[in-house]
Image 1 (spheres, rainbow, N blue to C red):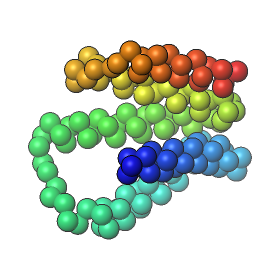
Image 2: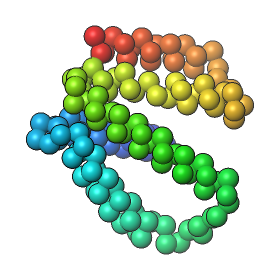
Image 3: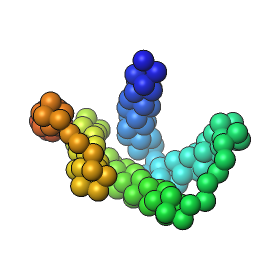
Length: 137
């Protein structure tokens, strides 16, 4: 049951993230938005680190650190491109299409992590693609 609470919170947070980005673009340009989001992100990450992670052992495995670096790299790259694209189109068009990013994750997980996808999940992926396209029309 706890996982569903996480799902709902993530859904709300990311939905508000897309909306607030577009709203901010009414007042500032994409470069300013990226700068201020970065400043806010660093501040909030530090607060989260202090509050939540004081009792955790920080690990220094080189492979894990490298993967974490690339996680940040791809995340930042996606956010930068997202905000530039968002400044050129409607949030109601861009957000559903970019919400297909889990399909990339699923494909890479199948290939490199050897995860399995059931027939029902495969059908769900197809429906998600169709839904995203229909929502962006």
